[in-house]
Length: 224
Image 1 (cartoon, one colour):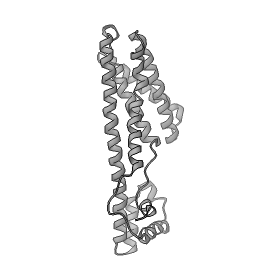
Image 2 (image 1 turned 45 degrees about the vertical axis):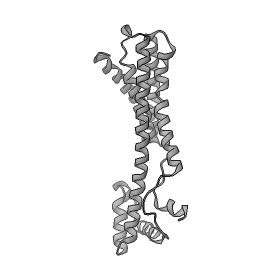
Image 3 (image 1 turned 180 degrees about the vertical axis):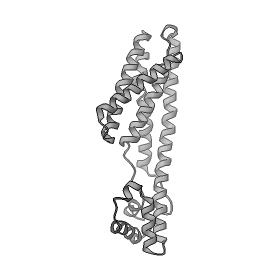
Image 4 (image 1 turned 90 degrees about the vertical axis):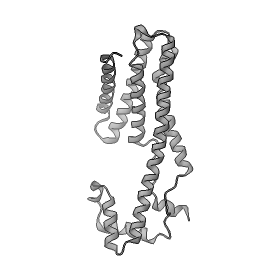
């Protein structure tokens, strides 16, 4: 089976740094790390506690990175499986109208309203004209590389937030620097969301940073 046939019947893999998924993972990792660092009680924290915090925060995001990478691969297989199921169903349809209906139902409502019947028929015709369709979805090397990139992104984003505690003897100052770094990174993540969604990048950046402030405040109110 040719790579062209496979590419025609399987949904293309999203970029590793797609606007929504990758920014979301960065923000989740940041908020998780912030929940650890925000819980430090400056007056009662010694070097041993700081070391334990560093290990706990890094270990938590390490586990999150593994889960996120695995779920990314699961999503890739699931999306490709849906595409292959649709292709098989359209090719097995008893008539053209049934095939077009299957394709139309598979489209999101806001997309279906923009696609004309001739365009849907063109899609059906290309699917029927394929020499063959893979029986089941597969993972490829670039998918595994993408999963590794997801894992590294979630883990690496923790480092700037927890490093001040490893590099500074003054716990209070380290906490302030850590929070400042986290808020800047949250702002940048919100900036990316805003640009993608068209809500206004600066506004989204400040909203995301404000959520970080609220999280730190909630942690303090709960005894952190």
